[in-house]
Image (cartoon, rainbow, N blue to C red; front, side, top):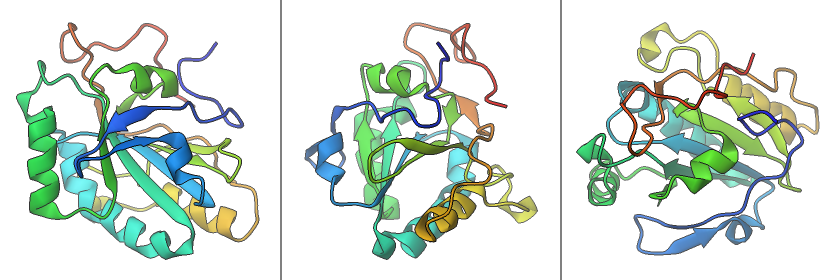
Length: 193
């Protein structure tokens, strides 16, 4: 079995606290035609430098039936910046237009097979995976960005077409696993393509 969720597999359920003071589970987003779940964090330069591109995407598609949910699964013991308290501060400061959930146990990251921050998963109305990987090809320096795979996927889906490029390698820092050195990844976590 692959480490990362495969195309056409169902979105694993979750029940996680968010920075807005509420808990959310998968069924809370049932009214959205498409669901984008992305693993992110507070400290990673790939996340920080591409957050404004992510903001543009969320603002572009939110009124088209697409819901965006960020999940931080990083161990706060690896990077204190990734604690829940710092998640709340970051959302207060930047007013990002997505929900930001905390996966302290890292069970959700394992269920989805999150490889990096950021790592995007797009699910159709039946919550089957239709795209996984990166949003753009240069998240650390968006001035060098030449492709926007996440928006390409969303455009195809909203036009009723299949996603042409359904799997890409996410680009970013690895998930920071509890009790492991900061660059450790599970043995079966590898590139997607």
